[in-house]
Image 1 (cartoon, rainbow, N blue to C red):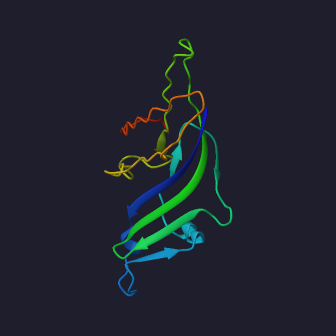
Image 2: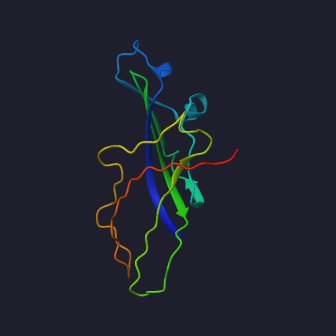
Length: 148
């Protein structure tokens, strides 16, 4: 298992939220409005535990743009499973993934796409004692078939 603190940022367009009457290019809404709009049903398939950050206030941002684009950003701490092969310990190499999926939508209704630049960013100077952290980003797309 491994534990990460992340800022998860999702963007989508909902034309029902487009506006022209307000002069600003975007509106920052109270996170309580999240219950009133559609949002992707993303979940972490290999998640074993998670918490939202709420100190000193909910660490959530909801921004609506004039054209109906939506930015939803949240801060999370996740514990994710990472099956390890230790047969070459202490010279082993482990690859730990973060697997994101839609809970209920099919690819006919929702497709997740990685942002072209800066989709995954790792804090500079991040170290783990006794480990060498190799930063590899394989932002792949896959499909799964489930029986419902």
